Length: 453
Image (cartoon, rainbow, N blue to C red; front, side):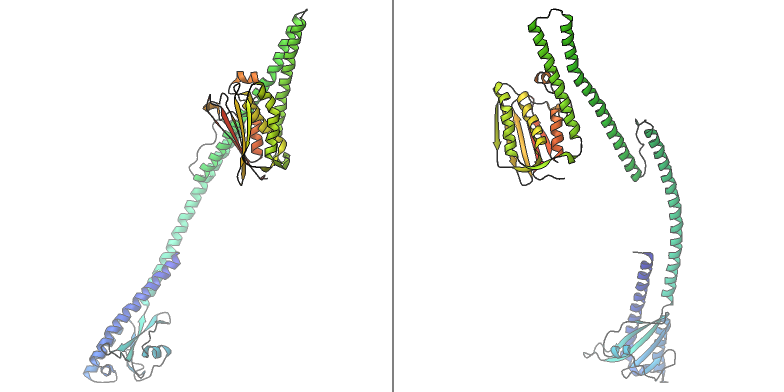
């Protein structure tokens, strides 16, 4: 509620109290008039009794700081404390309604007076006929003075509030400017390459949130930079290892003038194997680079996922049969989804191949397909060595290996799961792993049935 509204509220409340007080005093006078006889209040009468009764009317008028009129049932004015209209008739819309016993609201007379009409009735009479009216013109001087006082106080308060607000605004502006300058200096230091400390914490909530967001960006940049450096280091190492092996093998052949054919063939086979491994690493790296591009590179078509998985299992089954590993496909229902068939095949192929590579001889690999009204689910479960719990968050990182020695034996590049995760994310899906060391692992892919662009 505004200041003006509050003043109007108090002004109206004061007037209502004034009206109620007037009505109460007029009701007392009405009872006296009924008890003493209405004609005894006629100011034109010269009797002592009339003079005494008229004194009561004048006393009430003085009390109300206004004017009192007594009107009989014929609308004739019997008494007027101003001695102006005695004997005249007062017929107005308000007096007519009041004489009928209807309630008449007060009304303003100019800005200084209120008119309040009170009927004169014999409450002991069942008929309750209106025998006359008491018309009180009440002074509003006190109410007006109070309103003027309140308005003056309002103006003073508004002035004081304006001055305080101006001072406060200047102080806040100075503080904000200082915070901006300090933050700008810190950003200049960061822009120069010194981002070890980040932005300092500010007192204002908005500046605190802003500095916190900047620090998050800086920390994210540091993480990306560390990841980039680690990635470059891993790529360099992975690419250098086969080359180093080939150089050692080639130098061994060159250092021996008469190399037996059998040893020569063995070394050449090893060199070919290292070349194939180098080629696989480069191929996977190129695949990852393509995955890092926008989703516009996806070739989305409607694909029957059941057929896609059957083709993959037929391709991988010969490798599994050599080690006695049984692969089983379980499909709950026919699933048709909007996907990039080539990329999804690559992702699923990586999961199933890993389930075979890191499995025990005579183990099992279970692949299942299911769907609901919104997503389809591919689950690949193996009976292999499992993944330690502390390694499960890192297995989707590039070049990360749980068992590096075994990865070398199986020919892994450490990029398969990273490629799989990128493919799933490009399809707006998710991938999870559940595993216990020594009890195998279960990978679950969830992808929307309808591609979300």
